[in-house]
Every structure is written in C-alpha cells, then in structure tokens.
Length: 111
Image (cartoon, rainbow, N blue to C red; front, top):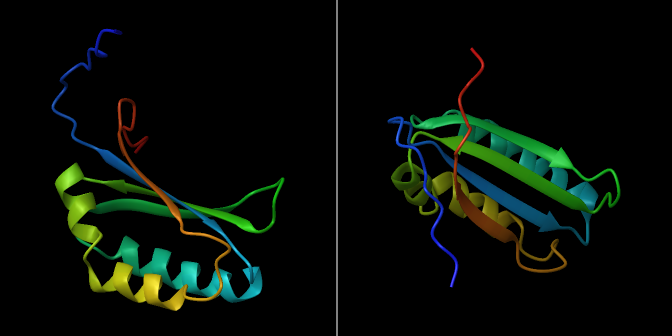
C-alpha cells in the first residue's frame, strides 16, 4: 500500500474543476460552453474559468475552473449556471462529460 501524499498547508485552499466534453455537434456545443464560462466567471468564489479545445481532437472541449475552495466548487454543481449548461448539452454530446475536482497544490495566481 502506498503512503498518502503529504500536502503542505500554506493556507491556500484552491480547488480546480476540470470538465471534458466530447461533442457530436461541436458547432452547437461551442456557444453553450462559451456562455457557461462567461457566466461562471461572474460567480463570487470563482477565480477563473477557461475554455479550451484539443489540438488533436476538435470534438474535445475542456473547461478548467479555479475556485476559492472545494466547497465553492461543489456548490457550483447545483448552481443555475451549471444546470442550464447541462440541460443545453442534451443531444449534442457523444458521451457524459468527464468531471474531476482537483486540489490545487501549485495554483497560486501570478498577479
């Protein structure tokens, strides 16, 4: 059995949320995800949200969000912004999105 990773406690509680989407209809998905990112950035505890598309697969979109805490990121799952985005994705995804909540070990802002 491996030892748990020792994480330094510098008082930083940044959480990263990574959402990966495989699109059946990329032209329909892009405006849905673009709106979601703009609206997410307006949420109080959101530090940033970025929308990316894969260089190797133009049907794969990734959203990377930075939150003040894992509690804030988890609360976002039930937000009207997330619910609207999820409903708008109906029928245009090849599969369920892959969602991962990560602890930011080195997630300090540069500015």
